[in-house]
Length: 259
Image (cartoon, rainbow, N blue to C red; front, side, top):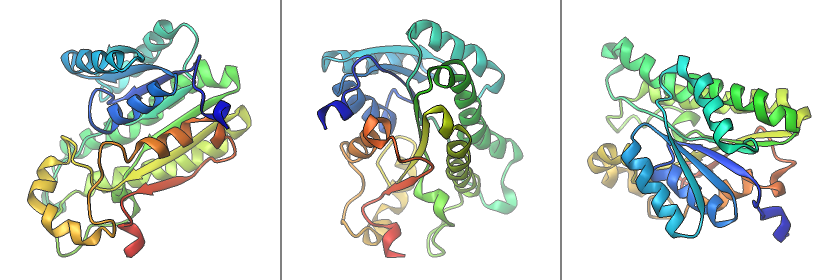
């Protein structure tokens, strides 16, 4: 079993990898031997995250890039592959955005912002890394970070106005299933994690406002912590999950299980 979770010689590209859930996944993949390439918009945050992983004994590289600029993704992917030198075996599509507004007043530019980063950039980056690296190698692991918000609407008793975010994460789940079917014969698996509420920078405002009302709906009695996404991500990115593809897994303390 040890060999199934040995990532030595593999390179993992993690978008939004400088903090939050992306950095959590970067930590565990690095701990198990993967060389990690972190992608994010802010160079200072990337440098800090690279130093953090290096101090833990890992090998990490940072590449700044704004994945919401869809037209720049092919060049970004080429830069990643040039930096890697040996291809990308693992792609974690984690970068995301949200925006809160009532549906009847939702700005069109905000809708496009959320959809571009949460859906279109995932398609574009997966397409580029897939065709340039994974398909030729006949091996790959793609892990998309969706959300429990993609599994249904919001609770009626909470003032959560996140129609674009929920819609985008639902699209990520269906994208995951569809790409898994298309690329299965290339030796590429495509799966998704659906985190519940984690106290990340993006979720902080919502959790500060609604955390007390949300917590009773979590059977485990707590929100996600700094270790909770590591084992599921490790599994989906490993050789052990070679016969698991097109699947999504909620990591939410049982929240979706309770209705």
